[in-house]
Image (cartoon, rainbow, N blue to C red):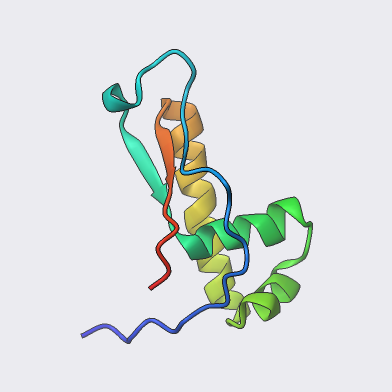
Length: 94
């Protein structure tokens, strides 16, 4: 049985739900889903320019956990860009 997921501090809520390649209807695209903690990690690390330790502190998680989250998010973003998939931004915080 996996350990229960610890609640993370999520402050950023983007104004959009999807990004997709231009000219292709959304219904025809495969999609990757970014979770709220992945969106927060991308914002802190890639947009705000904080290092992983500072970003982890802001999210109230350990640095290794932050590293796993940012790695997952960048893989999903890379897959979407390279393979032409839509990016769904999940805003449901559980």
